[in-house]
Structure formats: C-alpha cells, structure tokens
Length: 451
Ligand SMILES: Cc1cc2nc3c(=O)[nH]c(=O)nc-3n(C[C@H](O)[C@H](O)[C@H](O)COP(=O)(O)O)c2cc1C
Image (cartoon, rainbow, N blue to C red; front, side, top):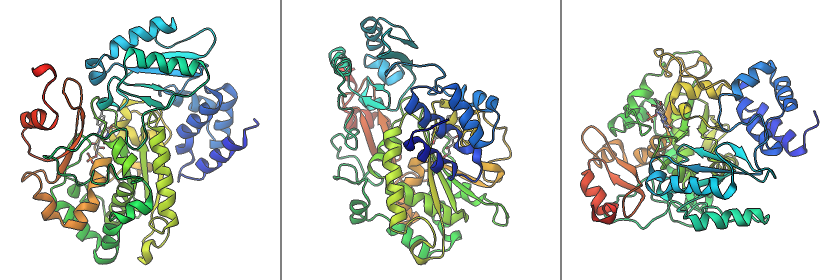
C-alpha cells in the first residue's frame, strides 16, 4: 500500500520505538486514521504486515478502542461530554440541542458527511464544563449559542480557535493555595525548556545523578510520605523499593497519563504547562530503580498535550537530559510518549500495560504485581503524572520538608479539581489535610446559588 510521505515517516518512527514491535500497533492505527478518517481494510493489512501480526490480531485489538473507527465518520466529529461535571453544567441540554441542530443521533453522520455526533464520557475538561471535542480540539464553557457558532464556522470551512492551549486551565490563584508542582503555571512559555530552566528545571536531576545513590533517592521519597496520586494512594517510595535489584531483565518506568476518571483534569495542565518537571521526575525514578527506558501512556483524546510533551522530550534529548550519559553521570535513559485510543479501563495499571504492548486493555490478574512482572514481563513501576511531577521537589527540598507540607501519613500538596456546582471551578494546589468544607467555601468560591 502506498503511504503518504508523512505517514510513512511516522510509521518508521513508531516501528523503531519499542523493544517489542506490536507496541506500535495502537499509535499506528491512530495516525493512520488521522489521515484516512477511519481505519481501512488496506490499512489493517499494511499495519499487520509491518508488525508481523495476523490481520485478525489487528482487528480484535482495534475493536476494543472507542476512538478507532472501521467505517467513515464525519469530517468534523463532534463529541459531547455528558459525564458528571458537564451534566451539572448543561451537557445533556447541549447534546439534545446538537441532535436537533444536526438532525442526527448518537454515533450518526450527516448525509453530506460533514458532521458526526457522539455522546462521550469524561474528556478531562471538567473545570471548563460543559465541554465538547471536535476531532482533537477542545471547546469549553459552552452555551447553546457558542456551540452553534462553532458549528457555523466549521460549516464555512473555518476552524474556530479551540481552548487556548497552555492557559486553558488557568484561574486566579487563591491565597490558601501552596503552589509547588503548579508553580510554573501562568508563566509565559513555561513548557519550553529555556523558560523551565530559568525556573529551576533539571536541578533535582543533577542532584540525584551526581550527589545521590539510587537507594538514597528511594529513601528520600519514602521520607516524603508521597502517596500515589492516581487514585489508590499507595506509598511511592515503598512501591519503588519492591523492584528486584538483582533481576537480569530490563526495568521500566511508566507514567500513567490516561486521566479518565470523571472529574479529574489535573494531569492535563501539569503536562501542558510543565512537561519538563514530569520528564525530570520520570528520569529520577528511572535512576532510583535502575531502569533505562520510560513510557508516558497518554489518553488518546489529549493529542495536543501529547504534541507538547513530545517536543519537550526532544528538547530534553537535545540538551543532554535524556539519552546516553546524562549530564556526564554515566546514566542512560530513553523516554517515549505513547497514545491510547479511547478506553477508560486503560487507566488501570495492568490494563495499561496490555495496551502499551499493543493489545486490548484487559486487566491482568494480580499478583504478580508490576514491580516484579510488568511491561513485557519485566520489573516495572507505574506512577501517575502528579506523583512523578512531585519527585523533583522532593529531591530538591528533601523528603522531610516535603512531608511536613501535608499530614503525618500523606505528605506534600495535592492538585484538587473542583467542577460542577461551585462558583469558581478550577484546579487548585493545596496542602494535604485541608478541611473539605473550607476548601469548597474559601477556595472554590462556595456552592452556586448560595446552597
Ligand atoms: C478502573 C481504573 C482506572 C484507573 N485510571 C487511572 C488513571 O486514569 N490514571 C492513573 O494515574 N491511575 C489510574 N488508576 C490507578 C492505577 O491502576 C494505578 O494505581 C496508578 O497509576 C498508580 O500510580 P500512583 O501510585 O502514582 O497513584 C486506575 C485504576 C482503576 C482500577
């Protein structure tokens, strides 16, 4: 099959990225779909051939993912979120309006092929509810009128400006906030390496590589009382210490950027506005467990965020923070960002690893746990974006100081996403232990309508 030069180059890049070929499957399908509008029969055969799979293996995998289509959809695929935060702010009304205006229902396409419509689960835009996505573009804080304007412009062949990238998540800081991992938010071009370096990026990495042994890094993280920010709250230092030191197999670090839990939209701005903090945290984690490869698994809906992080990874390579002999320390580390394709379940760590291996996102039976048998059957630590973004601060200020910001059993600060019926929806960084009523009333502006 003849591919466009752009797609052929992307395929080559993806095929060379992974220790196991099949891992490239889902990203290849996503990028092929971007070009053809859906996954064609010829494309299934082409990808199967390139990855040495049977076509049925490609078919059964792609059928699992909601963002992959085997039939043409509209040129503009309008996805209306009706999950909790959007529902509380008019998402259902917006969906009903969209159905009437486009004269189509859920998963249908207009006869001219211009628009298709889909009611979707949480897209990670909760503080901008009600929100929609058109193809990969986010539009937030919508009304029926602003929704109509977007459709009118698209109809005329124009592209309405999506949510401002980089500043989309910003709101006024509250005096009760204690910005630590969000401290670069709002600084112009904070995602770019030169700006990040001016604000202290990669100093923790330098310290970790030049002044600390792997065991000391783990001890410092243990002292910090950092607990996983992905939901289960497992102590991070303890998780890292479970990785067997004597294993002859390669070890891996995975950053879980699947962020699909309704109401959760904090990893998106962390990656948008401070990708270097995350990259730094991942490399330090790699150093702590003696891993030399890392992956960021990002939900398919966050394509523009993937592009930002991808550029940041390239910048880090070009300045010697990734790759061989980092900062002259003798430590090597490679990092890849990998797209999901629409599957809530892939946020669960074992399903995520299946997906990263190019399979359906079915959870694995535990034990064994990933620290011992993880990606490709090798020892793996998997942590959330916010967890890994907290690591540079811990290394710089010390575990104890970090721990003292929070409660005795849960150190540091947290990003809280508050959306729905509050006066000031937003993503606020507060010390752990703040009273929730105080938070809602004094930080989030109280419940709407004085309730
Ligand atoms: C159904 C389900 C969905 C999950 N989704 C996410 C997710 O989107 N992001 C995330 O970081 N963790 C998610 N988790 C938790 C992960 O399985 C895992 O505990 C986490 O990535 C570990 O990182 P942490 O220790 O830094 O929290 C999910 C768990 C379940 C059971």
